Image 1 (cartoon, one colour):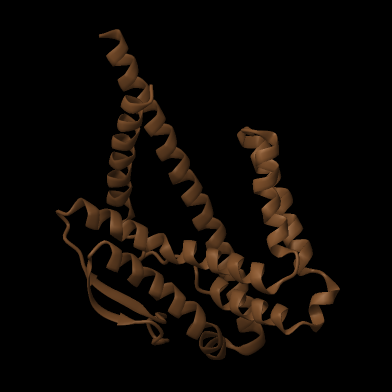
Image 2 (cartoon, one colour; image 1 turned 30 degrees about the vertical axis):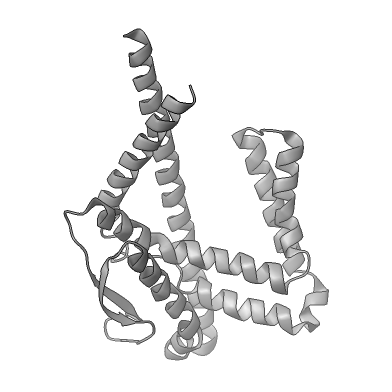
Length: 234
């Protein structure tokens, strides 16, 4: 009886910690993304004007944003009613949208809606990293050090790993500030596309509307996985 109660306690504690870490990390990422988006978009607007900034950045940034929603909806079999990848409505300040119909009684639809809400941020960051790796010299090398240093250190603790990630981030920024990049068209292509993405990659309030129930479903799935893992590997 004691062994079973300890097993249940371990599974519950592990699940609770994992959910807290995921939620805290997601909230921090959303806050940072909103700040970056506002600062970047305002900088572009100050140079080009509002309407020109929307068209100049939105045809890439908004399209990627809405496509991210669409892909997740397709994966979770959520019915899409209408899809507008880039259709600026300056009165309502909406530049594109995906209208969908989800089954509120289907837990996987709940999870899909939550993941679709944060998908633009994940896809946007991944795209920026991918472009930097292909178009900017030494950009990928800086982040490759994260994996190599982790392997050398064995299993680093959280603070040590954070130190590695921070160093890699500053290394990547340093590769962008190299004067040699100013004469390379690949660098300016990276700057333009990354700016377009950064201007539109933060989820809106409408995107995050169904994230609460999705977190509950995700927490339940994590609990099941932890229970199975604890049964198979004590």
